[in-house]
Length: 301
Image 1 (cartoon, rainbow, N blue to C red):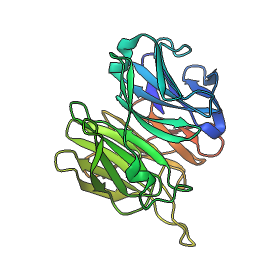
Image 2 (cartoon, helix red, strand yellow; image 1 turned 30 degrees about the horizontal axis):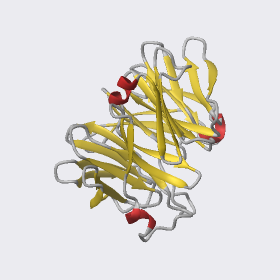
Image 3 (cartoon, helix red, strand yellow; image 1 turned 180 degrees about the vertical axis):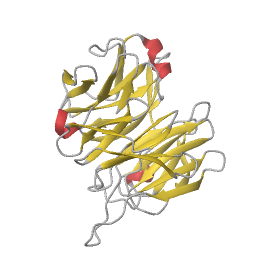
């Protein structure tokens, strides 16, 4: 989920709520538009500057597309991979704007690909560490990947695991692991700076130093239920004010300092916010976990 400040809109996609569509909320009219994505059962969206990476799930041909914020309704560049053979179309220059590594859903399982658009080629990165490792493939899928700029590796997260895997892209091999807070949960990865990365670990926010490849700060930010059941935090977004973390079991979003995750402010949204972004200095827009409905809140401070 991200905020497009120039056009005063919020962009997201929650698969079970939106199906194969990009969800757009116009702040002026408070209206929702769904932009359909052909040949997919659902999609994920990820912003990189002025472009958006759209990954197709469940379609006939594994597909990753790039759309621009100025024309979100149309693909500007497309990669399709059929029988391990890539086909590129559109503006090839746009691939330089996004992470060269991506998790690609296929009918045979998720693949990890390195996209080399100038040569119109794709390299399939080694996943034997995952396929032959001590993972329960029914419950532990590949979740996210992040390739810090200027470095020859990508970092991969696995469902229900606090261990991130680091792959050397040039050598095409696993080189190490990064241990998070041992909370066992679905890490989402975002670059904080050239030297640091943020990740969730079930109910905890984590900061990883990319030089030492180690956890340097963590903070548990969601308590258990009255009956002792564990509760997870939602997604997070990052802007100049700090880290905004959605909390579906608390009906709010927390604004956090990105260094040690101290709470700077809190916005009550009601519902069960799974995603949230700041849309002004004191306002938050979130989406409900189960329904995808928009939720609004303001900071208490």
